[in-house]
Amino acid sequence: DIDAQKSPFSRIEDLYRDDIHLNVVTGRYLMHNAMRHAMGQPRSAAGFEAIPSPVKTYLDKVLDDLPPPES
Image 1 (spheres, rainbow, N blue to C red):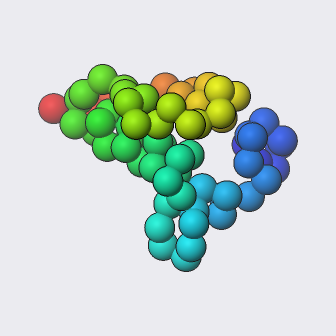
Image 2: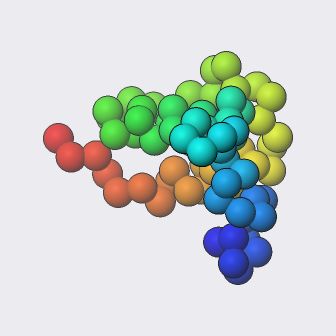
């Protein structure tokens, strides 16, 4: 998506605050909801009110494309 310019990010590192930690808005939103998805829980934006709307829309699309969790 980055190479095709379909992403609001210019590089994957934009999701990180350093070499190993996701940033506190976009990276954590993606990680938080990927984990919720894996646990069969609904998506949540609670605590992520600062995420820009176009970025949230894009990340939600990425999350929508995850395979269903195994039971």
